Image (cartoon, rainbow, N blue to C red; front, side, top):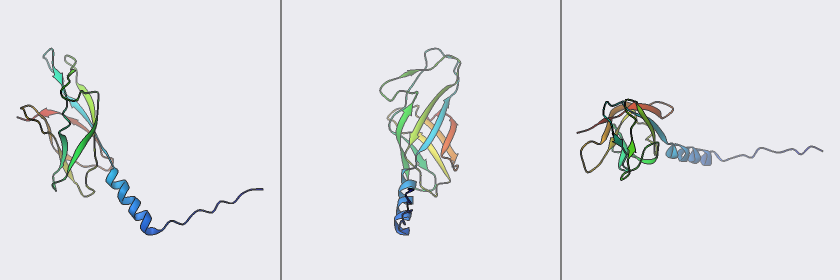
Length: 133
C-alpha cells in the first residue's frame, strides 16, 4: 500500500528568517588576472588582509579562501609572459551594494587594487589586478 506524505506547513516568520540567513551567508567569488609580464622571476601572493569594500557603506567583506595563489608570507611563481589567474572567495556583500573595491590592505607598497567593480546578480566576477602605490 502506498504511503501518503503530507507536506509540512512552515510558519511564514520562520521562512523569512531563513531567507535572511541565506543572504547573510552568500559568498562573492572573484577570478583575478595578473597580466603577463616581460620579466623573469616574478612572484605573487595575497594577504588575508584583502577585502571587498562596499562603495555605499562602511561594510567590508573578508577574504575566506584563495585558490592558485599563495597566502603571505609564501610566494607563487608567475609564468613568464603568460596571464596568471587565481580565485578569491569573500564573505557576502550587503544586499543593497551597487559597486565595491577590491583592496589588499598591507604594511608595504604594491598591494592589489581594483576600483569600482559593478555588482551583478551572480556575485561572480572576473577582474584584472593592478597594484596600488
